[in-house]
Amino acid sequence: NMAVAFFNFINHVYESTSIVVTTNKKPTEWAKMLEDEVIATALLDRLLFKCEVVNLTGESFRLQNRKTFFET
Figure 1: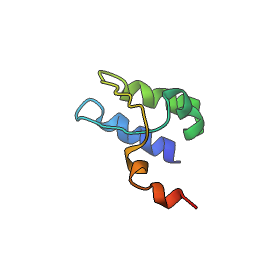
Figure 2: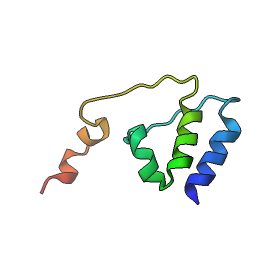
Figure 3: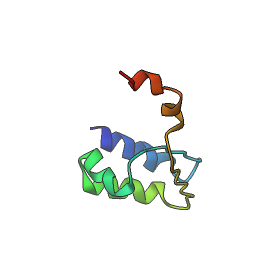
């Protein structure tokens, strides 16, 4: 199970190293994404412990450079 493996990894390293996570999912969406509310809650508890959350808004930088890819 991917959720359990991810949790085990984070649980193992979360107080001994810096972790950077980039995602387009809100914390409230993690339970659905991981298909396990208990694991998602425990995982977010560890990730958000002593953290700095940076929310970026606006158009995606990657998509700005690929507009022609989506044009018909």
